[in-house]
Length: 147
Image 1 (cartoon, helix red, strand yellow):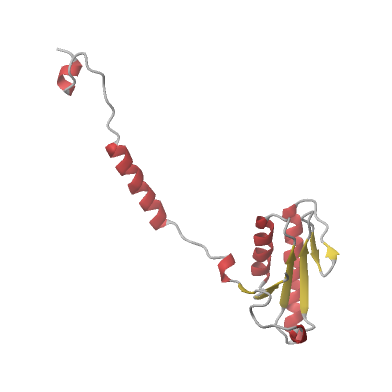
Image 2 (cartoon, rainbow, N blue to C red):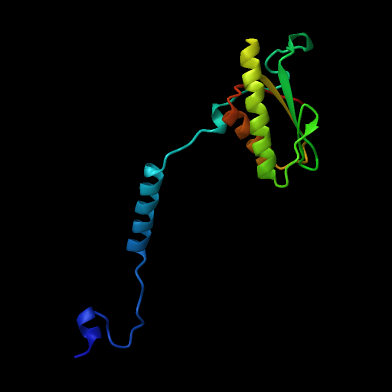
């Protein structure tokens, strides 16, 4: 007797593949990884005031502020000073360092630091999110966006 007889396969029929158990196992693994993963809310922790929404006027601008600009070429400027790094990561590290010094200076002056982000519409969205992450790393919580 052949092995096919004991496996329940009829002689002359094509073998078939049952995928039901494979699909069930895939969904179980997906649910396991979704439940066991930790969700990080890094960018969602920052409070943003959009222009025109918060009711801020030109008279409410304080002296303690820093303007971070991202231009069309994806260069990063802090108060019109270009951050000179070879790679985007180096420029972001320089931005974090500059923002940390600005936070320390604002704390010494007794005012909360305010950062205004002016991002070009042609820059990558990920670079904007990275600038927000640099603000979070440096301890800036008061962020406004320019139109």
